[in-house]
Image (cartoon, rainbow, N blue to C red; front, top):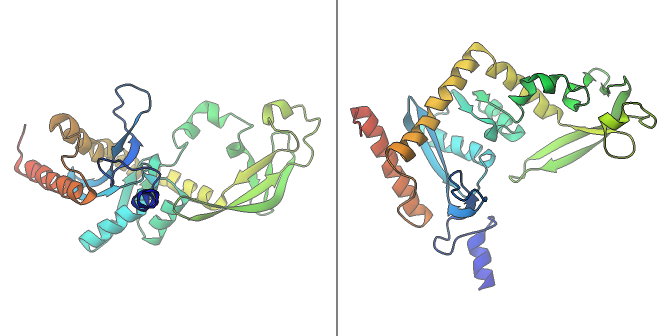
Length: 271
């Protein structure tokens, strides 16, 4: 029985007895506001002028890991890759930015802290490593006291998809007795910062795209594209639950709904 359960579980961390293909996830609609998990599928859709152009179901609750397989599916379905992609910060990762680059797409994809780093308190926080001056030629950072933080090693981390990232470590040499030490760090010893240079380069490129005139246009379109489609789906058409059990049947369920959604829009049918 235990081995059977492990076989059903696969790479997931949970499954439902009533629908073994479903995974327990925290949903946005949490009536009790207690973070209760429920068996669900992570539905991803792509839209163009609010028409569905692609859809897929995933077991993992986080959006980051769905980005590559979803766009691969789009490419397979349409015979070509999308020229550009717009997505929120849930999809912004080193692996996904690299994928955008490899596929030669224009990616208007936000990253964590995109909005926060533009606020005055963030910009004026001298102790935030994001605001430390970096000398690229000589490879060192400068702390708030003006001390050089030199490289002291590298680490390799792996994401849930086994994507490897290289993290560079930089350490100050003389933090003891520094008058700013209490504000700069909490740990004992000299301050060490961890930097992903490759991701930082992708973020810089993403920032320029997102804050450009074209980027602002794409960002303003996102709330009236997939978000609007989801809103119509749930609020107007009252489609909040799948009517079947099992991934194959659920896939058929949402596929037929997507066809109906596009036909309804094409014919201009109002509820």
